[in-house]
Amino acid sequence: MDNIKSFELDHDTMIPGFYCLGESHNVYTYDLRFKYPNKGDYLSYAAIHSIEHLFATVIRNSDIKDDVIYFGPMGCRTGCYLLLYGIQEKQAKEKTIECFKKCLELDYVPGTEKKQCGNYKEHDLLEAKKAIKEYLDVLLK
Image 1 (tube, rainbow, N blue to C red):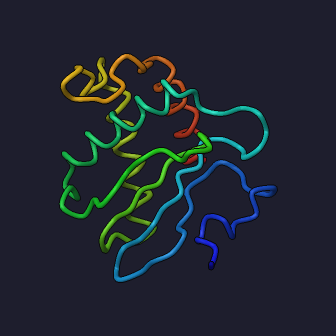
Image 2: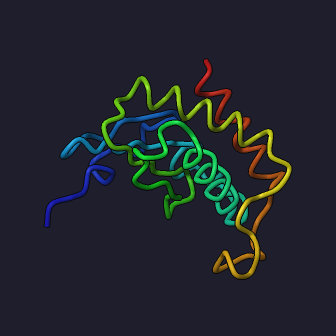
Image 3: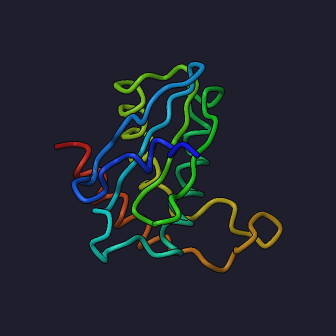
C-alpha cells in the first residue's frame, strides 16, 4: 500500500507549526502541529479532547463554517488535522489563529454533557488553553 502524506513527513525534523499536507479535489489538509514529534512531551488526552471540542465549535460557527470538512486530534497527540474545502494556506492559517484566539475567550468546553460526548468526563479546559496559548505563540512568530 502507498503511504499517506502524513507518514511521508520526516517526523525527526518536524517542529511545531502550521503545515499544508496537500490538496485533493479542492480539499486542503492542514497539520496543526502543537508539539515536537517523538520527544516525550505530548498533549494529554483530556487537553486534546477539549481542544477538539473548543476549536471544532468555534470554526463551525465562523464565516467559513460551510468549508469545514473535519477537525480532530492526531493519534500521536502532537497536534490536530484540519480539512477545509477551497481554503488555501494563507487564509487557513489566518482563520486558525482567529479561531484559537476565540477559544481562549471561552470559559467552558462545549459539548461536554453525557448526551453530547462519548467520553464526557475527560476534559481539561485549563490545560487546553495552556496548549492553545503555546501554539498561538508559535503561529504568531
